[in-house]
Image 1 (cartoon, rainbow, N blue to C red):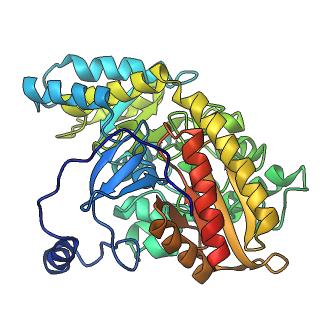
Image 2: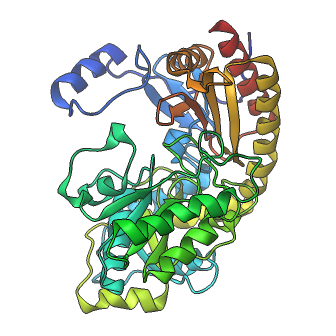
Length: 444
């Protein structure tokens, strides 16, 4: 049986309510729409680096980063120290007053952006960020129609739910009016595969067709995750975003890159996911890993587009608050100081090679894909028919937890293992992960 690498840390004693008591309280007092992983829910009470601890003190390797939220490791001492110091100084002052943190962080974040993407708006979640990006695009262009991708996920507010095409997250909201969903450029399941050098152009042609036949011919925006997250870690074919952006801009629209999961060096080769496609968006949204667990998100755009929102007062009570800004600044510093982008590339490549070796052993694995530490392993019952192995994926998922590894799952049929750990993952952790998934696949 696989054994977790040594870790010189002892979790604090836990004296709170039991997992059973917490589950009962949740059922009685918390929204019934909130779901939990695993047949027997796990209760996490402490985190350190790439590891999590339950109430009994058992240690798990976090292979999902709190849904890609923990970028530099749980409770990183420098991030915690920055937040604590700010909490002791002043916790809240709105943007109607000056405070150095928001100005300094905006400068530092803008320095990470290419081109003329230099103006930052700070909000509290990815849903808010994508909401604001759509407002900005519609106000700037004077157009309303938007194009997103099938199987996309952009948030849980009415506006972003309209952009979302993943059926498990979507209610029938009126904001869906005016939103078209283009074919997902999936090289594994789509009509144009990995052996087609023109796949990117062909998938982008569907965006052009939607503009021509599904809208007035004018659009406000095209929004796409740089790598699909909830959709199963789908990486677009080369040239896809470049061609899609050209079609959208010809129709008067802006191009929005959703970097909520792919940003901040996670792909390894680049700091932003859209850079792997060689494109320059008009608006970039980000959340999750930006603050390593605090409620922080951002929209970054050009001065010209940003000026559109100056025609009205823009205000967000908690957006840009000093504590979140301090934590965001600390995260940027840690990513640079500890070389976490390079680590994502090295350890991600090691994992990718390992998963491909497992695919030679286990016929359940239909596809291995991703970049850096944003990986997906799609499971199928039959490699020829590509019938989704949904039940088998759930069984592997459960078995991994029993063996001490927490991962995610996603995709349209819930048949893709999602591997998105904190970027401080070590080669020893990666070896443990591969051993556990190997054992879990063998048990199905």
